[in-house]
Every structure is written in C-alpha cells, then in structure tokens.
Amino acid sequence: MRITVHRKAHFNAAHRLYRKDWDDERNFGVFGKCSNPHYHGHNYELIVSVTGEPDPETGFVMDLKILKELIYLEVEEAFDHKNLNVEVPEFEDLIPTAEHIAVVIWNKLRTRIQEDHDLKVTLYETPRNFVSYKGE
Image (cartoon, rainbow, N blue to C red):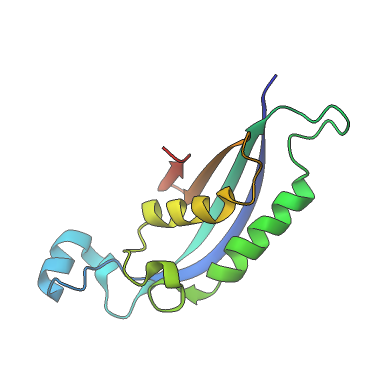
C-alpha cells in the first residue's frame, strides 16, 4: 500500500524572465511584461508530495513535522523575500521560470527524502498558473 502525504508552504519572491544574451526588445517579445528590467514578484504557493509505504511502527509515510522543517530550510529560507535572479545562486545562469523553480526545489528536497519514496513538487505562481515536477 502506497500513500501520498502533502505539505503546503508559501514564499514571496521577485524575478525577471530574460536571457542575458538577448536585447530588451527580444526579451520583451518572448517574455512580455515578465521581462521588466526592474523585476516583478509573486506570492508562490508550494505543495510538496511524498509517496511511499507507511512505516509499520508509526503509520507515517513521512513525519510531516520533518517535511515542514525541510521545506523551511531548503525553500523558504532560501527563496522567501528574495530576488531570485540576484540572490539565489541556482538562478545565476538559469531563467527563474516556474518550471525551473520547481525543478530546483525538487533537487534540493530529493536528497533529504528517503530514496524509496517518490517526490512531487507543485508550484503555483498564480492561482491559475502552476507547474508540477516529479523528477522525470
């Protein structure tokens, strides 16, 4: 029996979608107002899902207190109230799209979650725009 547990979190961050090797006109043509040189921000909502067999002794797939702490340490402390392009090393040469942010979060958490558990990250950039990544 495999069960999935979920933990929600949020963080606020600014970013700019642009390629350094393109001029402003081309960046605006591709990324629109998201390429604003003065950046823009989002109130990101994050759902981290862990799937596995419940532990026979505790009944937990994963202790949600531990998952909460991992999310806080690896995501909230690293991203909250930050300019992703400027202050987060993972985005020095990576455009901080929702897709890339989800992959970075997954990679940061994957090493901290039991190997036999599946991990999925769902990231809401807006209430209507969201992405999911499960390492594939």
